[in-house]
Each structure stands twice: as structure tokens, then as C-alpha cells.
Amino acid sequence: MKIKLSKYCDFCFGVKRAVRLIEEALDKRKEPLYSLGPFIHNPRVVEQFSKKGLKTASSLRDIKRGTLVIRSHGISPDVVKKVRASGIKLLDVTCPNVKKSQKVAGELARRDYKVIIVGDKAHPEVKSLVGAAGGRAFVVNRPQALKKLKLNAAKAGVIVQTTQSKSSYLKILTRLLEKNFSEIKIYNTICEDTLCRQEEASEIARNVEIMLVLGGKMSANSRRLAEICRAHGTPTYHIESGSQIKAGWLRGKTCVGIAGGASTPKWIVDEVINQIKQKNNTRKR
Ligand code: SF4
Image 1 (cartoon, rainbow, N blue to C red):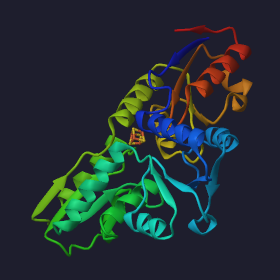
Image 2: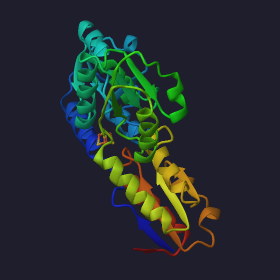
Image 3: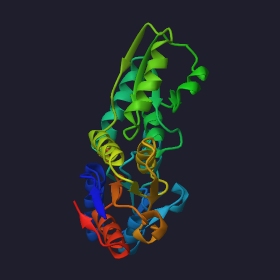
């Protein structure tokens, strides 16, 4: 069996940076280090870091002392204020790309633009963008949801979650342009890493018989990669580890593709390749 491996099978730049900063802080720590919720959407990496000493709190109330890590997804400015007021220190590992989007959201809101964020309302990055816009943003994740958008502003500014797909952003933008705003500012805040990952996964999915997408089940960007691959009609499996591969998936197949989400490390990719090799006599491209 031939394996077609995406060039983007490792942590993205923002997650690599976050992992390095957290490891440095863990090495030097004298007090507990916390993240609010899992620091990335990959349970296996989170478990590894919990063994190294990173604690995961489910609420700010659980943190009495020490340092809170602001995850690569970012955090709302009002939460930052609350944490500072409680005497907890902060280690900010927000991805620079997300910081840029937060800055745009804040500037648009200050200049009285209706801030429209294309993304998933429940995602921590989107929550941080809504916070940066002073809580006055409209979040939309599909064109039909634009029916609820009230035209109570003449001008609108649109940004998009860094890990959204370009095609779904374009669909929503097309519908938005039909609305009667006198001015619309459109920002492409999808990160370059996401675009490259999506394009490469799409290209591979077109040319293989089965596609494996590696990433945490809660990872929105991994789920999106899987959707992009499925859109080509290629049987696609979203898995967190090599042990989840079923022998039946590979039976009779001669070519398998592998793509990884932004929070999937290289060691999980290697593990999956080894699992495939164990199940088949493989030949890597
Ligand atoms: S996917 Fe892009 S925006 Fe998100 S952490 Fe990675 S590099 Fe940053």
C-alpha cells in the first residue's frame, strides 16, 4: 500500500510556539501552572502535559494561586481583567494570528462598525474575538443564519475564525453583500497554515482511496479537514490515534492519504504510519 502524507502533518506554528512557551514555564515554575480548559484540542498531548505538571481548570474559581496560561485561541479582555484582579499571574501564548484578529475586531467596534464574525460561537477563539469587540459582535457559521442579522448599523466589518474554510467564508460573504450596508470592510483572517493544510488535504483526498485525518475529536480544524476530504467522495476517518484504525478500512486498498490537524504532533503521525505498516506491506511515497 502507498501512503500519501500531507506536508502539514505536525503542529502549526501557533501551537508549536504555545507548546515551547508552556514547556519553558513548566521547567521554571515555583507555583502551579493552569490552563482554563484543555490548552489544545488534542487529548493525548494534553495528557502528556498534565504529567509534566500543567493543571487544567474548568473554571476560574478553581484557581487560587499561580499562573494561568492564555491558550493559543486567546481569551476575552474582560476575563483577563478578572484574572488580574484576583492576583493570578498570566502567561499569554495566544497565537499572533489570533491577536491580529482580536485587534481588528476591537478597532472595528471602536469605529462603530457592526462586527460580524464568521465562525463557531462556542469556540474559544470566537469567544475571545467577541470579547475584543466589546461583546457586541454578530457570530454566524452558515448563510441561513444571516436572517437573524439586524441592520441597525450603516457599516459592517467582517472577520473570520482563523481555522474556517475559505469556501464557507465565501458563501457567507456573498450573502452578506446582498444586505444593505452602505459600507462593508472584509478581512481575510483565515490563517495561512489553515489554508495550506486544507488545500493539501483536498489535493491528497482527490487521489487516494481512503483518507485518515488525525486530530482530536473536539478539534474544529481537524473536523473541517475531514469534511473537505469527504466532499471529494473519499471515505474519510477522523482518528486520534493509530489504534483506532480498523483493518477493514484498509482491506483491498492500495493508496491511503494522511492529513493532520493544527494540534496534531509529528509523533502521532509516525505512530499512525507504523500502525498502517503493521497492518499491510506498505510503500511510502
Ligand atoms: S491554526 Fe493558525 S491561527 Fe490557529 S494556532 Fe495555528 S497558526 Fe495560529
